[in-house]
Amino acid sequence: MDLKNRTAIVTGGGTGIGRAVSLELGALGAAVVVNYSRSRSDAEETVEAIRGFGGQAIAARADVSSDAEVRAMFSTADRAFGSVDLLVNNASVTRHIPLQDLEAVTDDAWEELLSVNVKGMFYCARAAAPLMARGGGGAIVNVGSIAGKTGRGSSLPYAVSKAAVHGLTLSLAQALAPKIRVNAIVPGAVSTRWWAGREEQMRKLAPSTLLEAISSPEDIARAIRFALEQEAMTGQLVTVDSGQTL
View 1 (cartoon, rainbow, N blue to C red):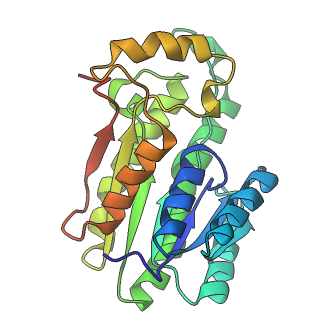
View 2: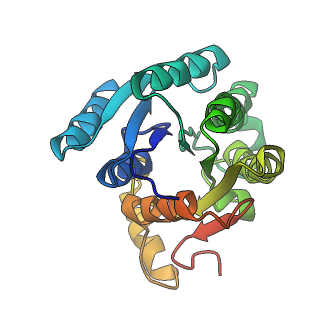
């Protein structure tokens, strides 16, 4: 799929992996809707960066855990650019809870992580589907995590939520075929602000990966671009982790 002149919605598009994806797609000639929930200034800076090199972009606020807000965002994108062809489900949240401390896993933690990380991706895919179908097809990429493969991560609910994202990807690929492709990119550790305050831990982790490196947001963005472009691929979970899980 040629991404030029397509319309893309990138959830959590103003920071980290989402910002890198927004810039990557904008540079390819896609019109980018940079979604944010709280990081308005970051989203607006990303929009200005895209416009600065001649691209098209707008910022759109929506809490992806709210179906009503998601539907309103997709309507805004459709009005602004006349279509929605691409969706990158990147928005996620976490809680840092020691894996062994089951008593620290509250109902509130479960509710927040499943609502944003899983239901939010479903809401966005559901809102995208009729607009993509109207345009003849489209592509969705969900951002998973190796936590969903290994069961380890920032918290037990986070790992479970990402395992659910992987399952959601497989189910959506079947539900939306043949016109809409759905894949997931499964990052390992990525150098983003999620590591704020834990930089020493990240530095210790890097040498233990096969490539002796932590992925950059741009590394993941290029993988997401590939999954959006590759017309012969759907229902795939593609790991990009510098060999962390081998």
